Length: 147
Image (cartoon, rainbow, N blue to C red; front, side, top):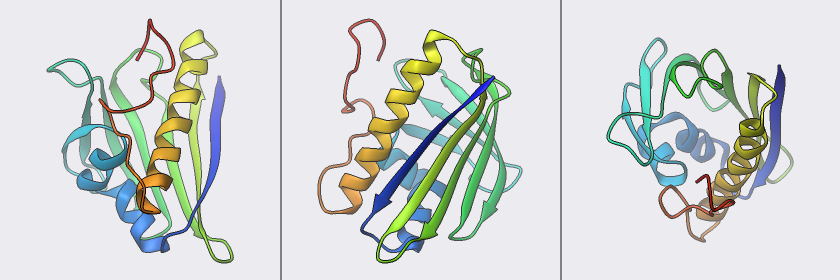
């Protein structure tokens, strides 16, 4: 197992960045359509090309303005059992997101997911800094075979 890790600095207030990664509305702005409850113990279902969710996450931690953590409980086999964490912190004039997708099996899909997470995080930064959000289905395609 391995971890996908990214660091992105964003010129936006920490509470605003946290809001984007901790609420359904924010997640839909930069990642994809989501249903469920964004509260500790709640479940969030994320949708891409199909009517059923691609993945379902259990919300394991919400520390206001600091950390969001989920555990994947349903969906893509490589994702089930993995943990996704957004650590949000002030860093001298910008807000930094330290992103981790932990305990990922080392497969070709891990490489794809790492690149896709990077594009979504850059889209988060772009949208919060006055540019465009690039949530699915308007995200950057990185392969003709996989979205």
